[in-house]
Image (cartoon, rainbow, N blue to C red; front, side):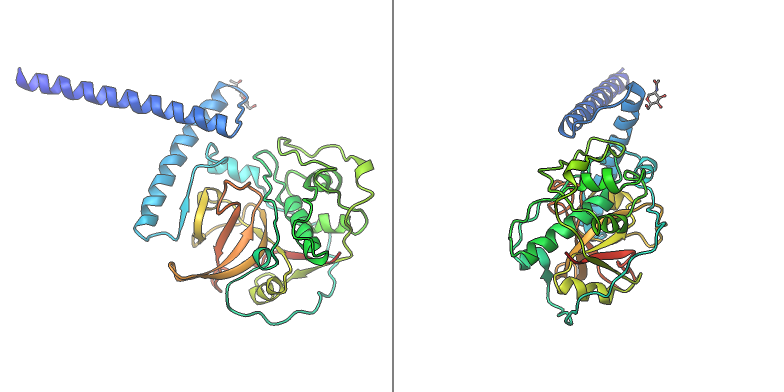
Length: 335
Ligand SMILES: *[C@@H]1O[C@H](CO)[C@@H](O)[C@H](O)[C@H]1NC(C)=O
C-alpha cells in the first residue's frame, strides 16, 4: 500500500514536471518567434523549427557548461539562427563561386605591423554600424564589400561617422542572379569600378528578401566608386596582418558550417579540427590582438548578423599558423 502511494506520487510529480517543461519550451519558442519576427510557411515547418530550437538551446547550454570548465574558449547563445538545423544552415550559406579572374592591382605601400593589439575602427575613432543580412539571403559578399568601402571612405575623408552604404544595391545590381546564393565580393568590387555605390539611405537594405531584387538604376549613377582592389594569397596571414595594421579593412571568406560559428556569442572562436568548407560567409577583418585570459592570439572581424550576434556584431577568431584566416582575401585599394 505504502509502496503504491509513493509510486503514484512519483508518477504525478514526473507527469507535472514533464507537462511544465513542455509548456515552458512552447512559451520560450513563442517568445523566440516574436523576438526574431519568425514567420513559418505552415504547421509542419513551424514544428520542425520548434524542434531545432529546443535541440539547439540544449546544445548551447552544454557548450557553455564546457566553456565554464575551461574546455572551450568561446560562448554560444540563442540567436536568429537557433531554429535552423545544421543542414538548413548549410543550405542557407552555399559556397561562393568565382567565375571571373580578379582584376588584381598592386596594393598601396604598407609598413610593418607591431604585435600590440590593433583595431582599425577604434584606432581611427570611427563609428561603424553593424548590419543585419537577415536569415533568408546569403548576402555577406555584398554587406562585407559595402562595409569595407564605408570604413575606407571614413578614413580617407576623415569622417568619423561615414554614411552606411547600400549592400542592397550590390545584391540587386551586381548579383547576376546569384546575389542570395554563391556570389563573392570581387564581383561587387568589379561592379564598383564602373558604378557608384549609393548610401543605404538612398538605396535601402531589405533583409527580408530571399532572392535578389530588381536593380533600381536611378540610384546607382552617383555614389562612391572604387578605383582598384587587391587580393592576398590564400594562407598569407602575414600579409593580412600588415594590411590590417595599415588601416585597410580586408574581406576574408570564412566557413560558417558549424553551430559554434552560427551561435557564437563571445570569446575567441576556434573551429573544430576537421571542418569541410562547404559554405561561405564573408567577414571584414578590422583588427588583431591577444586575449590574456585565454592566452590566445585572435583576429577581430566584423560580421553582418546584427549587433545581437557575437560581441556586438563582431567575432574574435583564433590567430595561429594552424588556422590561417586569409582565404580569397580581397580589399579596396583606392577609392
Ligand atoms: C509546408 O511548407 C513547406 C515549405 O514551403 C513545404 O515544403 C511543405 O510541403 C509544406 N507542408 C505542408 C503540409 O503543407
